[in-house]
Image 1 (cartoon, protein in one colour):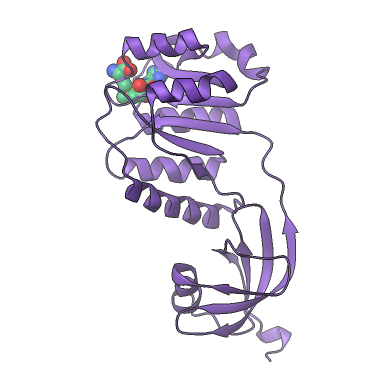
Image 2 (image 1 turned 180 degrees about the horizontal axis):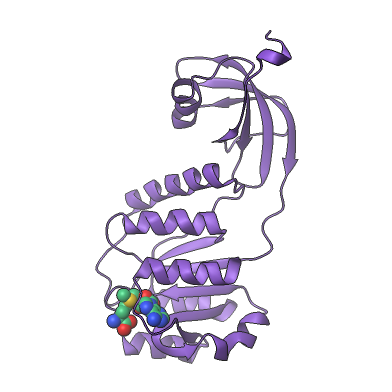
Length: 244
Ligand code: SAM
């Protein structure tokens, strides 16, 4: 076994391991094993950090590197409470890489859950396969930012279904250029008793019918200044306002 002076600490490198336990041995597989063994060229006795995406974080020692997996031993572990500030973003899906960008930044900022929306003017229909890829973006952003609870990506939800399912149990703010000013609803936001949820529309905007349907169910609409923002700018601007 290597002595202490030979032990490499790769603690700035974190690995996602859903089956992590508080003690004993653990095996990294697939892309996480590849990253540790082949990209970082890890060696036995290296020290790294593993997290399970549900608050458990462990310092682990590399024991054995095989072709397809890496065996490690948990040295110490701690459980982290979920963040106190909870925010859900429900959003229409922007084109191309912009959704990936939105997911990465929302994860870094600490958004709890993201729900992809379809609305009457949506042009991008998020497919399940694409959502699986976006979950990998969540993991990568957690690894990089030190976040230990994964951001949940919910099922694709239509606007009428969203109103039925989420408006009754949440304080819902719909981003809408013709909405109330953020200042005018400041006390509602400061004293909200139900969890906060912000909704962002597609590039063509929400239709008036969609806005009225949500307002009648108890949502509020809110304007974010004079300029028309892209979907991802509106989403990340609101997340930063409520989480930082
Ligand atoms: N012409 C569209 C409209 O009037 O809604 C613009 C749509 S904008 C490109 C995409 C989404 O971002 C909007 O549906 C809204 O949710 C949000 N958004 C953009 N700029 C906004 C602003 N100034 N205030 C509130 N929401 C905004």
